Structures are given as structure tokens and as C-alpha cells.
Amino acid sequence: MLRHWLEKRWIQFLVLAVMAVAGIIYWGWFFDFGYQFDWRVLYEVNATYGENLGLKLLSGLAVTLEITLISSCVALALGTLFGLGRLSHFRPVYWISTSYVEFFRNTPLLVQLFFWYFAFPMILPEGIREWIFAHNFEFWSATLGLSVYTGSFMAEVIRAGLQSISKGLLEAAYSSGLTYFQTLRTVILPLAFRAIIPPLGSEFLNNMKNSSLAMVVGVAELCWQSQQIESLTFKGFEATTAATVLYLGLSLAISAVLNMVNLRLQVAPPAQRSLAYRVADVFFWPFEVCWKALAHPLSLLFGTRRQSLRYSPFRAALRSLRLILQKALSLLLKGAVVAVLVYLGYEVLVGVSRLNWSIVGQNIGTLLIWRFPQTGEEDFLWGLGGLSFSILMAVIAISASFGIGLLVGLGRMARNRIFSIPCTLYIEIIRGTPLIMVIFWVYFFLPIFIHTYLNVFWSATIALTLFTGAYLAEIVRGGIQNIPAGQFEAALSTGLNYYRTMRYIILPQALKQMIPAIVGQFIAIFKDTSLAYVIGVLELTFVAQGLNNRLMIYPFEIYSTVAVLYFLCCYSMSLVARRLERRLSPEKVLLRL
Image 1 (cartoon, rainbow, N blue to C red):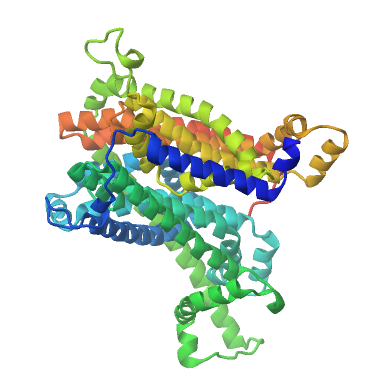
Image 2 (image 1 turned 180 degrees about the horizontal axis):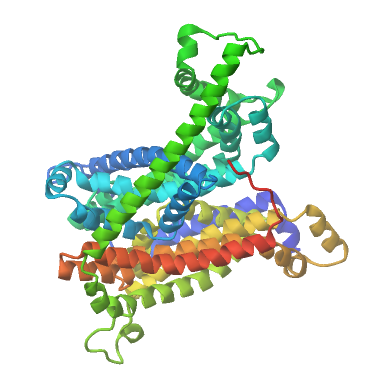
């Protein structure tokens, strides 16, 4: 009887409405927060400081947008360059591109930001160092770090998009007389970018959310401004809520733009082009005009030149000479690239050899396990810290988030709105909010709800678990939706219920397809343990920062070592993911340029 009524759509929405109203009444009137809410702090002039602190949030939003736009453009250029380099037959270019992608993908962004801000200036001449310090170095170091980090992910997306192009298209383009760059511009890249818009859009979204880490190097972006308001007024709930809403709004706006890009690139007959298609056409018309002007500047000035398909003896000789010169120039360029790489490699080795690496040997135990001088039984988790703490936090978060992701992923696919709508809200809110904001929410406000003090380790671990669970839920949903509908129908026709169908038929097949993506998410969660630094967890990044503050003059050695430790752990897991992907995926003919 109850099941019959719960299958009705209006009953489902009624239940959700009653649950929402009950929650508002309980949390709004009966629950004792022990906290006095004052939302006026966001829109009134503060009597103590004489300024509207809400405008500070908007100025932080403007800085976030500026960092996001600049770093996204630079990252796209780097991603295209190194993505093409990953497909090159010229081995030095391939090795450099692969090294760039693998190292920066497998190193936490927070460590990279610390390296660019603290360590990189130390190897520059003093005059250049003083100049960059005088020109908003915090902003540009954060933008550079974001660009390099995001570019390594975009390079893999673009490489995969290029390899999805049929090899016959490349051969047809070459056989028609197109050069390498003409083939890229007119055939390969347009088709590849049409295929990679969805994953590339995810990288743009991640780049926007990752800009919140710029606060650790003193950039007054949105997250920094929200914490500044909290420190000035002790109204952290209001400031964090406003910043979260702004981040969610940015995520929705970026998603809307990316959806318009996707619509603009779709080929649909005129009868099926809805209003959304026409809006996308109007939105991108100025960009298309600029692209045509840049792509064909000479044709706009002089028009199209018609040539005969037959070569005269003189033109044939000129063409042969041009081909010979092109080959000679290509050899010279390759030789120059090799010479430059050898020279730079020699200079790097000489510079690195002059550094004081003995300081790393003296403190490597601290970086790995970190024990307090006087360790007692009352110390949290035996007084451990450093890399061991990061691994322990990652293992706990990975284990707990997998169960959450599985349940929420199934809940989002449920036909009953009582389950699907809350699961969808959880996924979209968490995925649209930077992890650092989730950590602040758990650290500052979860103890208020449970009336219990939480150690910073557990606060960070819970935040990582909730954050990763949302991403794993989407992986689970994608894996299950990839199973043919006939599998569900065949299982139900044999008399299996929903639970048995999922347990014995669907999930075993879906998990096989999800394993590479799940392992990739586990790599991400291990890197994200570095963000626990912001609330004082004694993980590897926090210990490294403490060593740098104590020693002062060895940031290059310390942060380089930390980056290598993270890289070794993450790259080992990425090798496992790659092996699983090769084993579980069908063989493909890869495109080589």
C-alpha cells in the first residue's frame, strides 16, 4: 500500500516539501546553534571599520574571475602545445611534453603554488627578484601556478581528443596537399575540440574552483575575502555562505556558457534548431568574426588567389626547391631544439648541484613521519605527521567515500524523486564548491551541529570524504548508464528484484568499467590531502611549510623534495590506473602526428 502511494509523482514532491519545511522549522526555531546570526554584515556599512564588507566579497569575486580567465587562456595554450607534443614522433619533444604532463598532474596544486611563490624567486638574480616583488607577485605567481597545473590536465584531454580522430582523416588531408599546420587548423583541431568540449569544460570549472587556493599566497580573491570578514566580525557562517553561493553561481554560469559552446558545435538540421541554438549563434558571432579575421588576414586584404592544378617546369623546380629547404629547415630546427634542451639541462644540473641538499637528508624523517619530541600515549594517532599522515587521511577518506559515492550514485538514478532530488542536490552543490570551502564548512560549523569538538584531522578527513563521494557518485552513475538497457530488462524478466539485479548483474559489469576512473579519483583525493594545511593538520605540506619557516633560506630544496614525494606516490597509482585502463578497454589505433 505504502509503495503504491510513494510511486505517485505528486506524493513524492509532497514528501520532499514536508521534509524541507520540517527541516526549516527545526533548524530555524528549535535547534540551539549557540550562535547569533547577523546577515546585515553582508550589506550594511560596518560601524567599526567604516566600510561595507559585502563589497569586499564582490571585489574578491572580481579577482577570482581575473585569475580564472587569465589562467584558463594560458592553460589552454599550454595544453594544446604539450598535447600536440605528446603525439610527436620527435623524441625530445615527446619526452619534454610527457615529463611536463606527468609531473604537474601528479603533484598537488598547493605545493606548486608554494614552489612558485617561495622557491622560484630564490633562483632568480636579485634585480629580477626585486622587480617581480614590486609588481603584484602574489597574483602572478598564483596565476602562473594555476596555468601550469591546469595546462597539464588539458594536455591529456586534447591528446585524447586528437587520438579519437580517425587516422584516415589525417591521411586524406595529407594526400590532398595540405601541410602539417593546415591539417591541424582546418581538419584535426576543429573535429577534436568538438569532441573534447565536455571534458575541457570540466577543466575550466576545476580551474575556477582551484583559484580559491590563491589565498594561501596572499591573493585577495573570494575565499580570502570571506575568511577576512570572518576574522574581522566573527561572522563566519554568513561570510562562508555568501562565498559558497557566489562560487555556485560562477559554476552555473560557466556551465551555461559551455553548454552554449556545445550547442554551437552540434550539427543539427534547421527544423530541429531550438531557441537555445539561436542564442548560442548570437553569443558566439563576434568570436567567429575575430577568428576568421585572424585565420585569413591575407585573404581579407587580397582575396582568394586562383592557381592552376598543373605545374610548369619552372614552378615544379621551385616546388622541389621549397621542399628541400623545408626539410633542411626542419633538421636545423630539430638540431636547435636538441641543443637548447642540452644547454638548459646542463644549466639546471649545475644549478641544482650547487644547492644544499644535505638539509633534506637531515629532515627527511620529519617529512615522512614527523614525531613530536615528547610523544606520549595521549598524542593523537601516536604523534604521527608528514607523509604518513597524508597517506592515512587518504586511505580513510577513500574507503568511506566509495560507499557514499555508490549509494548516492544509485540514489540519483532512482525514479523516486524522494531519493533522486536530494542526491542530485548533494552532488551539484559539492561539485560546484571548492574543496577548501568544504573544509572550512566542516571545520567551523560541523562542531556546532553535533555539539562536539573535532580534531582537525577528522575535520579534514570528513570534508575530503564528502567531497570525493560526490565525484564518485557521478562515476558510478556514468558506469551504470553505460550498461545496455537490455541487461536490466533481462534481469527483471527472470524475476530478480532491483537489489539483486544491481548486486549480481549491473554493478559487477559497471565496476569493471569504472575502475580506471575510480583509481584516478583516488589519486586526486591523495593530492587533495595537502589542502588540510589550511586548518593546521600535520600532513606533508604543513610540515614542509613549518620547516621552511624555521630554516628560512632553503625553500627550493624543501618544496622540490615535497613535490617529488607526492609525485612518487601519485605516479605509482597512475601507473596502476593506466594498466587497468589498458586491460579493461578495447584496443584502439592511436593517431600520431
